[in-house]
Length: 136
Image (cartoon, rainbow, N blue to C red):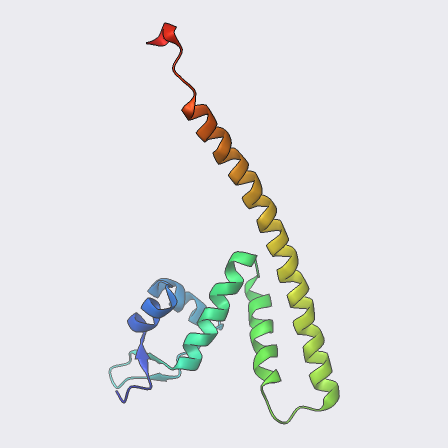
């Protein structure tokens, strides 16, 4: 290997994704190894790692696999140099839709976190109460 390719174990360590998860993303078409070794091992590039990191960031926001695939395709297409002005505008509008979706999910997660923090605080308060003398 010349250093430009990584095996799946290194990719898993760098992305903090399990081997199983990376293989699942491959099976669903979200990521494709850039090459295979002579022994048939999956080989990934830095660009593949970046794609997996985008997927990892979308997952907690509740993006469905199809949404992930669409957004990855849209952002990849936006990097192309042969876009017409109309196509670029259409693709940017899609990205804005996903940005609004992500912003709403973040707001929802913040609300859930606030409820969870309130609950944990009530448990701390309860745990700090002195034991009644009748129980001692």
